[in-house]
Image 1 (cartoon, rainbow, N blue to C red):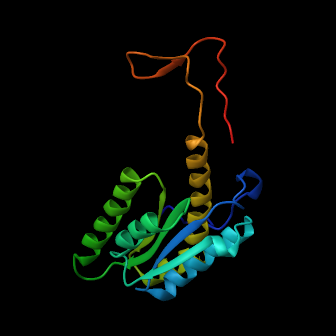
Image 2 (image 1 turned 90 degrees about the vertical axis):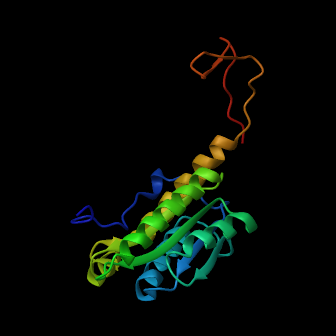
Length: 191
């Protein structure tokens, strides 16, 4: 198991970009709310610990994990956010419902990342037992919500940096599709 002997809540603030000017959306499933509330708490605490103002954390609830996709899509379309976290919990049962929900949510969130310019962070626990989910939502393995918030900060920063305008006046497109700048033309990142 990937999280055995690993606390998901441990991170080094000194390695993170400033998050004080970012806005984050968090879409939370109400299903298995004893778990999803713990995940949200971990995410919120990590955001606040990294100087994200409370008013820059927008939370929406949806009924279940499958609805996270639509909730995240509407969040992307209607809110000015730098990243969205989708928080849910699906626990293995005796039917194939678990497989269909997990596959659908995974693919839906992947699709949002491909189709939009704003990162959507996958924070959906897909565990075999309730105890495994408890352990990962503030229990012995820390909090996956904390990990998701740190990922959201890093991805918002990557998006910001990639969006900076560059002066490509003197550019050549190589046959490989890469851009080659003429020698002597420094690449300048502007904020």
